[in-house]
Image (cartoon, rainbow, N blue to C red; front, side, top):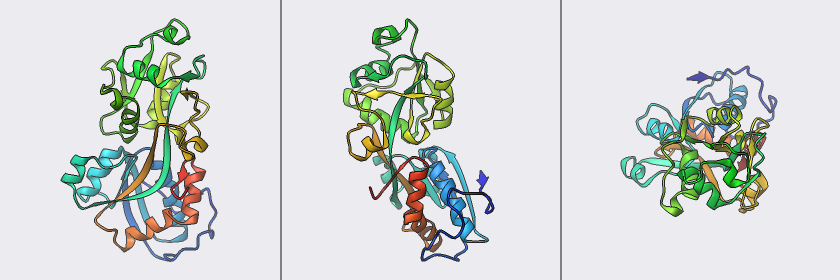
Length: 271
């Protein structure tokens, strides 16, 4: 678990925050979704610069880990890149979700892969194992290396809801499983045959995001509703937030907090 130091340089300089909790000392532990992690880390850095003496510990572990951890009291705030499942709502009835940002899930391939556009049907075929060679999609004659996320991943849940649930099928058992957005990106970037999916906020020049049914996975297309694989990012408390938790949530949802959301390549929840 990482303690973000107060002196760390942030995206926004000291003195830019004007909120009702200025001067309040906060001690919090936050864990969960690796998608939400960049938002939580940068918000924690900026918040602590403005609240000397505050300590905010931030770690990943995945959405399910964040939900379980806040439910059992291991952390104060759980991060999730998916909504609570019905089974979780039943098991943890006291959990309260707080929407903090919007995101899209991009389908990515190696930059040298000549495939730049897939249909939803083709993507379904790849992830169910029915399409196994890039030549069947107009690419080179090579086996497709399917990369997916671990069970409990909010990014995987979002992908499956949009891509596989409509045809009532599951990811092929030949898929390679990675347990974070970062590892997914590294795997796809390192293999010309690979295909994967990750948060739009993690897309960089090391991978190529493909169009889905001719729609590019961009912030604008997530914002306007054209891109089909989208989700709301959450911070979760056990019951209504206490004064300390509320102070941090107020900052995340403030104008300055939402600027951070945009700066780390996500979409402010107000848009």
